[in-house]
Structures are given as structure tokens and as C-alpha cells.
Amino acid sequence: MQMRRRSPPLGPCPAAPQVAEHRQPAAGVAGLYWIDNPAPMHGFANPARFLRLARWLTPLLLGSGLLLASGALLWGLLVVPPDRLMGDTVRILFIHVPCVWLGMAGWSTIAISSLVELVWRHPLAAISGRAAAVPGAAFTAMGLATGSIWGRPTWGTWWVWDGRLTSFLILLFLYFGYIALANAAQRDAAAGSGANRVTAIFGIVGAINIPIINRSVVWWNSLHQPPSITMGKSSIDGTFLWPLLFAAVGFSLIFGGVVLARMRMLLADIQAEARLRRKAMA
Amino acid sequence: MSTIKPKHQRLVLVVIALVALVGAGLLAAFALKSQASYFYLPSDIVAKPPEADRAVRLGGMVEKGSIAHSPDGITVQFIVADGKARVPVRFTGITPELFVEGSGVVAEGHLQAGTFMADNLLAKHDEKYVPREMRDMTKAQAKAVIAETK
Image 1 (cartoon, each protein chain N blue to C red):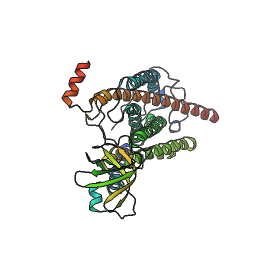
Image 2: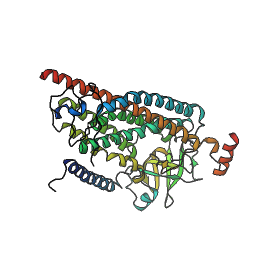
Image 3: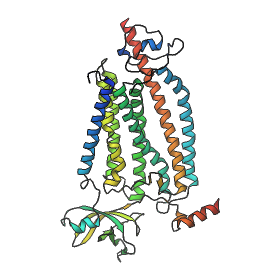
Image 4: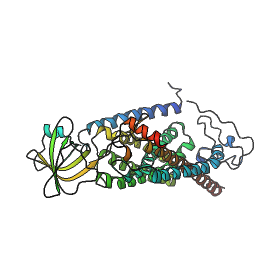
């Protein structure tokens, strides 16, 4: 699969961050971006183009996500009737379910980014994987906490070591490992070393847990109930389902906004570091 | 073969690694099939009764009409069934709120002379979420009610 060569920006592009600094000669620093990145085989993406997009997309995603999520949560908290068995406890669902979905979506983002990073050496892919790790871990932790709070009145226990709960706790630990690995690689990686690749490999290997989480309630007897929404069918009544879907979309928009904001931050970090290194060399 | 692009070579390597990884994961999950279950079903318990002093978990549906309260007020007896086998359970203590007939339950305890002596009861929730007002209605009735309130 050949990456399409990006059309060069029209004018000089001094703001373009020098990603993957070590791959290019130090010459031509202030020149046209595409001269700095001739990309004969890698087809490096143009981070300047991404930054232009992310600059207005980040606040848009965050704003609309906050609006939608808070609306859906108010709907679930104030309008929706109590459940036949659980009563008011059902309202935790509107936070818990989006959180666990995004906990898994976060690792899926890491896995896909890692794949693109390993195979196509796409500089933005490396950054998007690292950017998704912290919000993914936060949603996973929130999913565990809200699930525990839901479990106490519903099941009669805060925690059990069944297949679903255990595999989801492992997901949180995988996030911790990935974040530690990515930080260590960023701090210690010498130019051209494989340290960043180790992070990407860990991201792909950890993805094996995602289908296990998904299937855990089907493969093994577990205290956690089987999936309610499968292949377009839902055993959740419409009164609960609609606010749940709205909350899920709102939380996803927030997640996307946070990932974009963190990608911009990581790009700025790389850019600043590259400038420092250039100054030290000069 | 000598002119294969490094990009394609990496792609092939990653795909091979992924296939091996998924295969290993599936094998491990399959091997764990009986070990990683959280509880035994009544048919497992009847087919292979555990030793009397071994703590196990029993999970299934509380049979309709089987819950009987003892005169002491806190001991409850009921039957857990999975459609193939039935196991009588005795439990002393406070039952969870969702412990009702026709609903799922997980009991922790041990088997004693054919009766499962539970030390702890956990209610199992099913995957259905229905508002309280619509609990006893059929689908058509529920639709009619929703149409009325609109």
C-alpha cells in the first residue's frame, strides 16, 4: 500500500514541527516543509496540515461532547423512570457503559496507531497512540469504579473475580504499562533506537485483551450479565437506550477532543525538543 | 523477492505476528474454558458433586415458587435450576435486593448431603433493562402505553 504523496504547502511553513528529527539531515531547517521531508519511501504525513485541522476541531469536539453528554446525563438522571428490579440504580448505566466502551475504544486506537506506526512509520500514528493512552486509562478506571458502585446494590458485592471484571482490570494495568513504556521511550530513546517500536509492539500485543473482554461473558459463566446490545438488537428498553446512546456519543466526542488536544501537546513537545537539540548542535 | 519493499515486508511480519497472537489467545481462552468460569451450574454439581468440605459457587435461576422462609426469619430455602438439574439451597442471612424468584443467583458455599449450604448470596442481573411501570406488560401493551403518553 503506497501512501499518497501530500501536495506541498504553497508558501514557507516555518510553523511546521520537525517530527522524526533524527531521520533527516540538519540542513534546510527553515525551508519548505516538503523539502525537509522528501519522504521517498515513507510518505510522511504533514503534521502542519493536521495541526491546522486540529486547531478548530479540538474545541468543537470538546464543546459539543460536553453539551451532548451533560444533556444525556440530565435526561438519564431526571427524566428516565426507575428500572423494574434495580430501581434508581439503573441511572449509573448512563455513565458506566460509555466509560467502558471508551476504555476499550482507547486501546483499539492504540492498537491501530501501533500497526500504522510499525508498518508505515507514520509519525502521527505514533503520537495518536500515546495521546489515546491517558484518556483511555481514565475512562477504564471510571468504568471500573462506576461498575463497582453499581454492583454493590445490584449483585450484593463491590467486586468479584469473574471473567469480565478481571479482564477489564487487566486492561487498566495494560494502560499503565503502555504509558510507562511510552514515557520511558520518549525520555531515553536515542535517535533511531527501537525503543518507540517496543511501545508499538506492546500496543498491538495488548489488543488481544479486547476480544477477550468482549467475549468473557459468553465463554465463561460470570456474575456480569451478557451483552445487552448485539448486532443491532437490544434488550434495553427504548426509554433507557436513547439517553444511553446520546451519552455514548457525547463521551466519545469528549474522548476525541482530548486525544486531539494531547496530540497537539505531544507535537509541540517534540518540536520544542528538536529546537533545543538544534541550538545545542549549532 | 529481492525487491520486496520494506513497508510490505513489515506488513507481512506484523500480520503473521497478529495471527500467531490471536491464535495463542484463543487457545489460552479455550483451555481456560472450565477453569475461568465464576460458578458451576446445577447440572455440573449434580453430574460431578464436589467434596463436602470444598467451597464452590453455584449459579442458576431461582425456581419460581421455590423460596421458603424458615420460622427463624433469616433462613431461606430455595431451588436453583438451569433447566437440566435442580439443587436445593439453604442460606442464613440477608438476601440481596434483586434476589427474587425467576431471577439469577450465585451462591457461595459447599454441598452437604445433597443440599447446598450457602455462606453468601449474590444476585445476578440479566441483560434486560425495563422501566418499573412496564414490567408486567407484553410488548404490545407497552407500545400502547407509550403511544398514550405521547
